[in-house]
Length: 175
Ligand SMILES: [Zn+2]
Ligand SMILES: [Zn+2]
Image 1 (cartoon, rainbow, N blue to C red):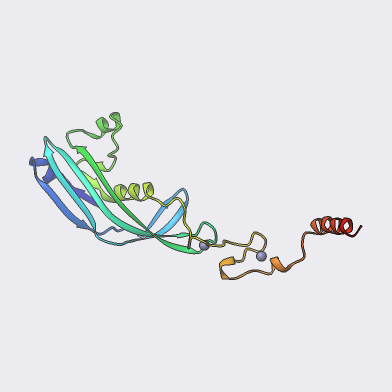
Image 2: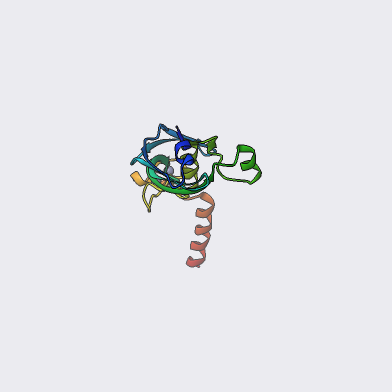
């Protein structure tokens, strides 16, 4: 989605306020592709602070569905975000690159909302995802979700080497 900032840029102190709906249904990056849902309207505000310089802010929240770190069960995680940037619309693309400006979201006077929101989601991506704080995870032997009850691995006899050692201890006791 592209929003034109041209009118706002033309007049000093002019403001722009918009409520937007995202047309993203998933987000893909190095860790995979995850379904995404918008929780509330995205609010875009732009203020021309003078001389074609705009303060642009975007805020909202999305929910993503990601697997639990321990048991892989899908978990819905809310990601709120808010971003404010000062954009100088006098600069052209080449100048922006030279200045190491972060606003690769600008194409002329059009703002790329999806790219901006995507960046915000990735910056606010949760570091640890658990279906619940005490998630027991999966059994390392059979892969059963231990949150749904114990597996049969626990009932199996102990490691034979350990059994031999405990037998030795028993013998000492008996002496
Ligand atoms: Zn879990
Ligand atoms: Zn098991």
